Image 1 (cartoon, rainbow, N blue to C red):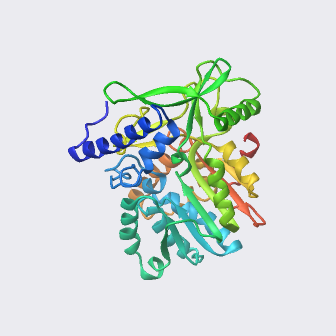
Image 2: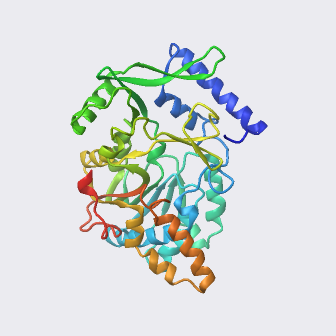
Image 3: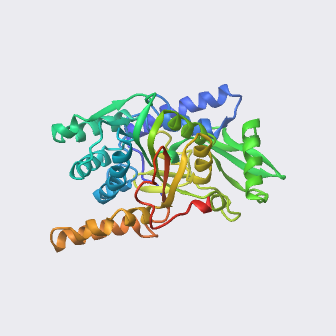
Length: 385
């Protein structure tokens, strides 16, 4: 059972729910799930990521790897240092959370002697941007002075683009396999104004994407199969490729290859919601105050990247990436048994299969680099895509 909403949360939820109900009615009584998710997460002033709710950390809804341990960013810095030595330029972080990864990366890159010219952050959440400014403003001036916030992607960019748990928050289509064809899942209203899931005929875009998916899988999906298709992944990757000159895009997210994502036994997809450190699967409650995500189809990401002129330079589990970039060495360097034990516990959460190690993947997409970024020497899963 989910914890009850506070009075402020309930008012916020009611306001956004009212806005979505109006959109459902304006659309003739049915709204695609993609549009519902877009409004729930990004409606100006009310959506989960565009409003002021505390999202990250122990007092928020979920914890990311950089918040869990500085070991994540210290290892990532080794990979970034090699890219910056080869390509120069800047770091651009998409959705920088609390700013913890940016702070830890800048400190470690300074120790490695490879600071970026600038560390740019593109953030859609005003609340998170404020927290970032507070945290990063406390860095030494030589580091804090390199940080800037953007309101859109730069036209041209050389260096590194970092996207940690960003692709999973792209609004996605949901579908139902019925009668050998595809129907789209969306939202209608009950007699009391509650949100109800309903299916409707799929439009041309979803129908074409579903047909391509079935062709690539080589088999039809079972009757009643429900899952997601993120049609926004391709344009998103293309927009990043358009601005990236020489350098690399590093993606960190929980996800699967296409054949595992659409395994016949995965009959209800991967959609998950997060509220106060609890995960559940009902996106129609707590709208505006809970996160809504879907796992990433990394095969779709790879196809989009290649189509946009990027090279698929690496794909591995988070565990393999961190081991290849020296997480065990960072733990061994700890000063004293107590500190070493603390870091050992953090490292286990980052790399153990039952924690984040296997579910989270790392993908490197590059342009103009002679060698792949560091971090993929121990594992190469590209042939599984």
